[in-house]
Image (cartoon, rainbow, N blue to C red; front, side, top):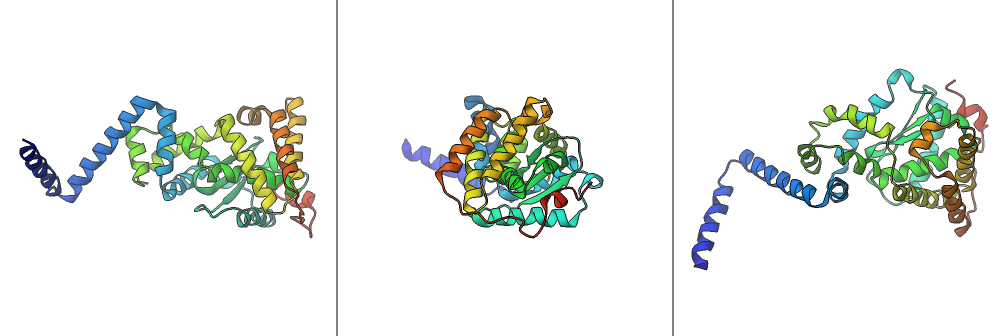
Length: 285
């Protein structure tokens, strides 16, 4: 009868409550893992990443980002110029103050490398490689790059990509906020980030929200456009194979950015009114 079934189910739940706390955690983790495995079988890894990423605590993202940085930016290759770092931090602060509230603290590391690129790690860490910094003619151009990368962080694009590489056990740990296994994943995560090709939708989203952030911060939006015009020129000369592998479709990107910039008039104020960017950007040489 229904009463008999209810009594039997009640005894089962009472039995679970009587387990030691550690055993209950193991049981619940097992149930969570089975649920994730079922989702994986039903929807596939990309869809599972879409489902899981919003559940990952920002503390886990930050811990992962902090563990990746030493892999991508060894201490002996980092820019030691205090003046350059301070000017870059001013740009990040201005952008951050203009944007919506975020749980992330943005930290920029500049690395000496032959690579022309910028990377956004989970949790707020951004890496700028020196050739990209040197290619900018104004701080407003660099602001465009930073705004784009900050939006990749805020929109959790890298986190979503890295979740796809995690084992089922690691995914369960990420959702539970367990940072104990992050160190073992850091090397693999770093390699993934260096070759990460965001989807067209993710790049368009970061461009759109990045331009909106530039406009909200009252920064000249033409700087962001000029940077990608520089990229286009270098692309024509086959100078940026690495950058092209992760940031494709420069013509379409330029057209979209110009349209976005025209939508909102900006009464901009200079980012570096008291200094020459040419002097600042080359301080690490």
